[in-house]
Image (tube, rainbow, N blue to C red):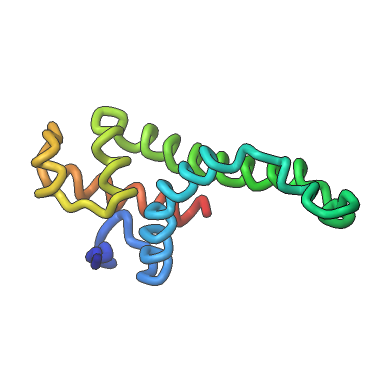
Length: 134
């Protein structure tokens, strides 16, 4: 997937590497949501299948899991809040578009209630804001 970066005359211009980083970061959204859903079991920190109970070392598996969940949760919240701030009227569509890499035509098939210029402008604005925040 290739997104056209905003031109230097655009109010949402950011350097192309930062723009690509913001696009890639947004595409990780579904992975973070999946990991939040799956990372709930802390019982893997202790093994009971050996003669002696062995822990996973000096580490605390519950803390490590909580830390990972907090990290994913913060990333999900950052993206969702930024989309809400930028375009609350097309929140669901914009979030779906930037996290799945969909273009306007694909969004139009899903019933987006705005024109292509508005959608692409809001998407560029979102990537610009995300690049500033991450």
